[in-house]
Length: 113
Ligand SMILES: [Zn+2]
Image 1 (cartoon, rainbow, N blue to C red):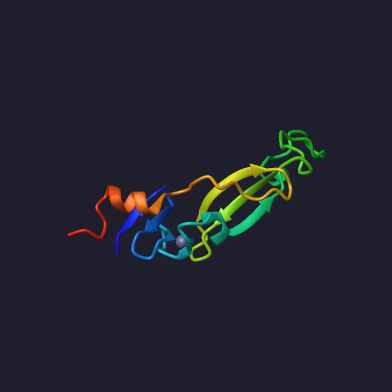
Image 2 (image 1 turned 120 degrees about the vertical axis):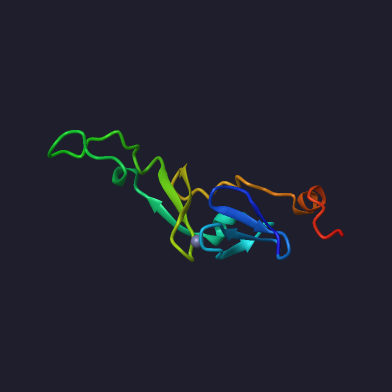
């Protein structure tokens, strides 16, 4: 088993070609797919992240939730917040990390004596 750290909370197991949480080791999804599809997803109203600036009114610096949402991606194994992105409501998650597994294996001579 050879795991390669990709971000602070994500790693890839080269033997199984799966994304894993680095905090608890939970298997998320195939490394050929978007790791966000293996996470718990919480589309959050931006108003919940900003305190109101005027007492008694709901004025803050939060963007309007009809324009964008704060989408949080959590590990289903331990609940660690793995990633957050700002997206228009209903927009699919961005595919921000795409790893060429074969090239990575070749680069580190994985599977060779
Ligand atoms: Zn985890």
